[in-house]
Amino acid sequence: MISIDDIYAAADRISGRVVRTPTLFCHSLSKRVNTNITLKLENLQSVGSFKERGAANRLALLTEDEKKRGVITVSAGNHAQGVARHSQLLGIDAIIVMPKFTPVTKVNRTAAWGVKIVLEGEDFAQATLFANELAAKEGRIFVHPYDDPAVMAGQGTAALEIFEDTGDLDYLLVPVGGGGLIAGFAVAAAALRPRTKIIGVQSEQFFSYSFAQNKDLNVLGGPTIAEGTAVRKLGNHPFEVIKKYVHDIISVPEHAIEDAITLTAEHAKQVTEGSGANALAAILTYPEKFKNKNIAFPISGANIDTRILANTLLRTLLREGRLLRLRFSIPDRPGLLADISHIIGTKMGGNIIEVSHQRLFTTLSVQSAVLDIMVEARSAEHAKEIVTHLKEKYTVERI
Image (cartoon, rainbow, N blue to C red):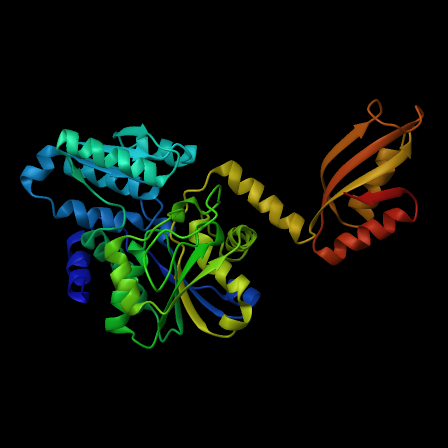
């Protein structure tokens, strides 16, 4: 069981080696979700994640003999980058084992620090087994991404900064994978802000927590946008802290995480990966629970693949009704496409994103055509107005 003294010692140890990230109240986001939100911008760390804190603290505690033997770790990306960066700064040879599903962005960014990358295992558990076997074979020090007191203490340093920068908080929401981050936060809160409730957040795909016992549950698993918290079982060290200090752990659906990524970009002007959006997703999923409360949470990471980010933004717009796909059945004659574009863009103020004009692959008359148009509207109501106006003149349906 780590203590507040361990976290303070970690803070001194890693001072100057990691960024003291901003803690900011976000007015726009608070207004949007009817609560008072303070953000801890861990996405601004050098490797784009809070994971650098724990890695820096753990590596700083290695003996000279352990440094010579080298280190090995397993990670879906963020811890990997933290270990990679700080092992290189300290001149330590490092091997990073990453599951095969790890996003290319995280693999490339980790490799950029000059360490050896090994892609092994269909999931985190398989990758961990391989890393442990390789560590034993080569005599390397295994740097666990979360089940390590030094790593937990390092992650808790972010909570120290939150409490230094904020007033009273009702809730501290924390994404949960293996439990290292929430364990560090919980110990800091128990010592410094005992009134603040610590709530963990997991994706429904990997809702692996049980207060009664730490065992594998019948979780869905599989693909999730929150791959950073796609862990089937909590670490043993974090679990002991969680049982004692954490008030609850809740789950959120995939679509809520996607919506939270978009809201963070629109209202906080920050990029977050799926796991970093877990906390905001909890507010979206349980609005009455958190309404008008004073809440802080870390944007824990920003290492999201650009293609996934783009698709997520578009999927959210589609769910909110701000992005609509329209299908027209029109006579195949000149001028109609221009007229339809004029109605959507000039008269109604919609933004045409994509146009597909199909003459051959259609069951309509040879003198007819199918026209598909993707349009961005200001709101769901604006989208309805566009469709209503077009139907006055054309045969059109939303698809």
